[in-house]
Length: 123
Length: 123
DNA sequence: TTGAAGTTCTACGTGATGTAGAAAATTGCT
DNA sequence: AGCAATTTTCTACATCACGTAGAACTTCAA
Picture 1 (cartoon, rainbow over the protein chains, first blue to last red):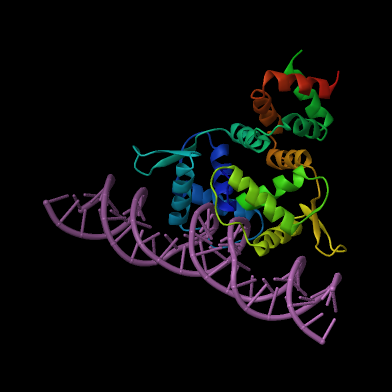
Picture 2 (spheres, rainbow over the protein chains, first blue to last red; picture 1 turned 120 degrees about the vertical axis):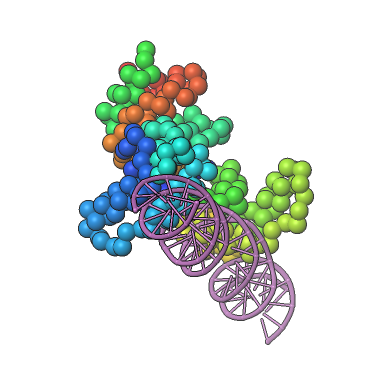
């Protein structure tokens, strides 16, 4: 599966919030900002760290980079919603008890979401 | 998350297929059988290996053991369907785009499953 | 009481991830 | 062109999860 580590996840979250492709340095700044906003302040990550993570995410097919512009710019390949939906499907898998799983699943979503689902399922 | 390794997954699959609690030895046999059925035949796992995995699964809260009976007996705490549904919810998370995720998700299930979902959602 | 069966402890190899320095490549500027 | 600053790639190490199992300890039946 394409399971993500904490830092990878943090990076993806930022990329998902930024429709435009951004540079590793910008990402590093955003990450620093995020951690400082969260109270804890620690030394910001080295840019190489961010670059390593981005390479790995690229290898996993989650990130795309523009090698044309010199400070390479990165962007997520899919939206967070798409990604999450894919993950859910992966978890659901092709088991013979898919319907049983769906039944349990449905039983847990909020009323509002159940409404949304009805609409989505149409008639 | 409660993500499982290959062996852990194999063990859980067997426990899920067996409503009654079973011993580590039985599990080892079932695992051997399964691998040999799958063509490849390799030396069966040591019982300690199975026990280690079971301990880890117990720590993760997926397995429960009866320490009363001497060869301890193990059983899954939840059904596979429950477990999978929980995982799906975990993946879905509490993001602000839950509905967007659900939309994508719904768009991917089969027609038959969509039917099932409609029924489950009632009205 | 003792040996067999079962359980716990300890341990090692591997791969994923966080982390980053060293080295190589690329650019802008003079 | 030549060099210094910027950026990217390589290499590396620590940690943790997991597969795997031997060694040691515990328990029970005979």
